[in-house]
Length: 322
Image 1 (spheres, rainbow, N blue to C red):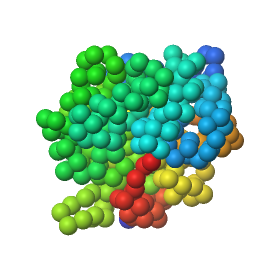
Image 2 (spheres, rainbow, N blue to C red):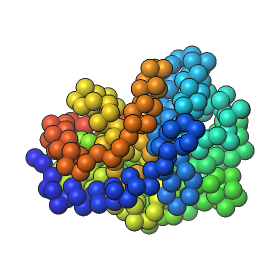
Image 3 (cartoon, rainbow, N blue to C red):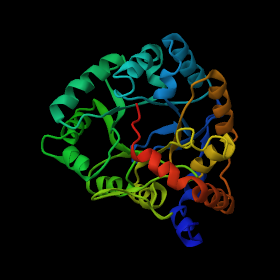
Image 4 (cartoon, one colour):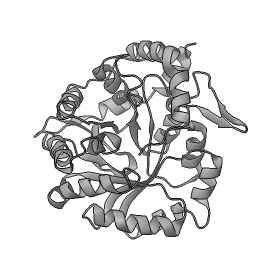
């Protein structure tokens, strides 16, 4: 089952605008974009510090990989308390001791109560060796009940808004791997500056409904349901899961998968890089980036979504990013 051409073009109308906004850093040659209404300029490739970062096992090797990326022009670093219960933040903090001013530093909070979130964030600042972070996301929004907890009077949004007012954080965001309908509700009715969600050529993204998971038609995806709203609100958008947690590895080249997501109206694409050679390869791909023609994007998306979307939706329904 393939999406209609009208639906596809509707979701990629702003792709040319995003591509036109690319500027190459004169020193590193890394393409950069403005990160939505934050006004910051960031590298189009972000360094993911989740399970692939922790896969280095040795913190010295992990820090070497991160430094290697920063040396080659990556300026966006993505971590979370939930990545190893603070271990990723600790490793990133080793690098931040000397390179904090060079990066846009993002972490995430998976707690939903304000008091618990406040405690975890205080620890995050210590682990990251900084007195401020550029962005904190509400981590991994799932369903309507989860959104209600986030928005509650004693919910995590209360503390994030307060920290933004106090300049401890520059921006407030929200991420999701699962339900694009719930994420759309979240960004429509709350004051988020940024968002991060699954954006890959297979158009991952399902809906949850009373009674459980409901497989989607092809038009139900983060790309079609959430991206236009985020663009309309001038939010900074980070694409993640471009390889669908390896679910698309080998189904298309790494360059096509990365360039597909970069060709959408997003600010950057975050990728985990568990080997030094992956760091170098992904950076080279980013530096070669030119917007993928729309007909090529449609062909790739039709092919991969028809064959893999249902399987990937089922996988991400129970996905825990840690």
